[in-house]
View 1 (spheres, one colour):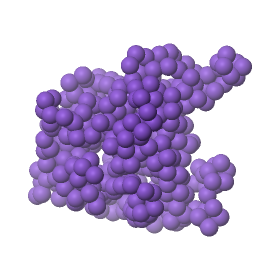
View 2 (cartoon, rainbow, N blue to C red; view 1 turned 180 degrees about the vertical axis):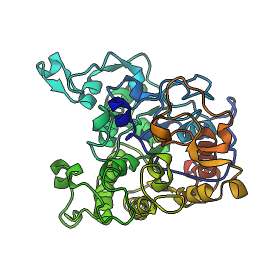
View 3 (cartoon, rainbow, N blue to C red; view 1 turned 45 degrees about the vertical axis):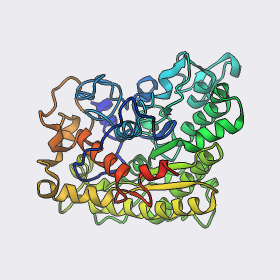
Length: 422
């Protein structure tokens, strides 16, 4: 039971959303709308990287993937993810999980690896992966670096093993840009043009809130907001005194996360990214993991929802600033908080859902955690909002991605169709 009790901490989803709108994929005969799709984030976008990492946060077993053509691949849902649908709408193949392309084993050494290259000492996971070669030809249509249970802060998810933090993911993308991609382009100008026209999608931050807030107090009225020990000295050193507030209020914690996220997005820009879609946090206080653990009135734990809103407001401002200051860049905000909240409160009236509070699969720990391996799920996942204690069903992911691709009510100030035409 100790193992499963640890698993119930992993992975909140960063977005919730709305209408059961179906997007339209492109045919194989049509040219893709973008040369490649690069994916970063947590379990919402992870398509199998964690399968090969030393972590308990995995989804490579049934009933996960029960509606996916290749079965349980490591996606934390019954079918496709938002990133999968976006790839289809662009006319691209699903970006393969980066770790699956490596030629060699990752192993384990306190979640690091002793290597000859490092004098027999342990390397951290990202450095070890960086020493491995790509097996065969590199996929030029995009890569997926997302890793379940990880977050913006480097230590998020470490209690379950070792995942790839956002910094780790961009380290690996940097290695791809500097070492692997130049083999396929004659000039730096050709490579830069390829990257500038590619699409980058990101969703991350929910696990930082789960690790920092969820273990505190289970009452909505509590003023205890964050465990200061979760903010390491290495993180604080990278945040200016003005941005770091020792009272660790929701406002100051959001500032720390936004500061770190901004640094990583600027790194992506320097590496060649110009078209970036970043999704905000969803109503974290409404997921089964939270509502079944915390005392609350109403359908959701509003204290957590308000914390997510604080982060989202700062995120919107930060993305606008990046777009205005970084030449030829477009940082798009993926909305979803209010729409998801509305779908949960009004499931049948507007969205055709039967259940927006219970997981579709039989989940561990009274429905608050991951699906129990091998047990059947509900027969009608399309009418459920939640797949397990944290994540959504494929039908909800289809709804969000379709709206983001075709409509500015979710992705703004441009939808993805408009973005790729720039």
